[in-house]
Amino acid sequence: IGANIGLYSLLSACRVGDAGRVYAFEPHVVNVAGILANCELNQLTKRIEVFSCALNDQCGFFDFQYSSLSPGVAFNQLLESGAVTEQTAVTERK
Image 1 (cartoon, helix red, strand yellow):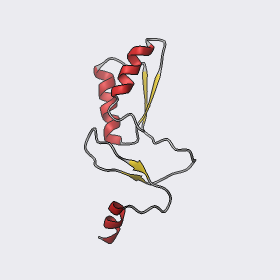
Image 2 (cartoon, rainbow, N blue to C red):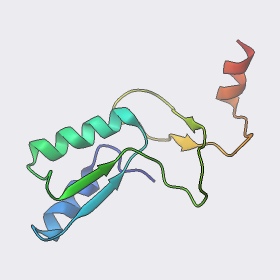
Image 3 (cartoon, helix red, strand yellow):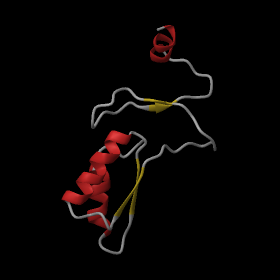
């Protein structure tokens, strides 16, 4: 689960107050730009720290599948090692 464009991060930042801190993790680089812009617009840059990475229960580097490069898009995912999806199979055949 990623922070997407930061809606819940912004709400959480308002609740924690000046002494609190919110950590937002979002691997989709276009959405990270959206979170940063939303933090700036809402003057919450001191309360929200944005990390452009995916979280996993294993250490290492993993392929990341983008469902779209449009801002605000969801359903992106880390792929398990060696996993082939319909989209990657189509890409590999081209």
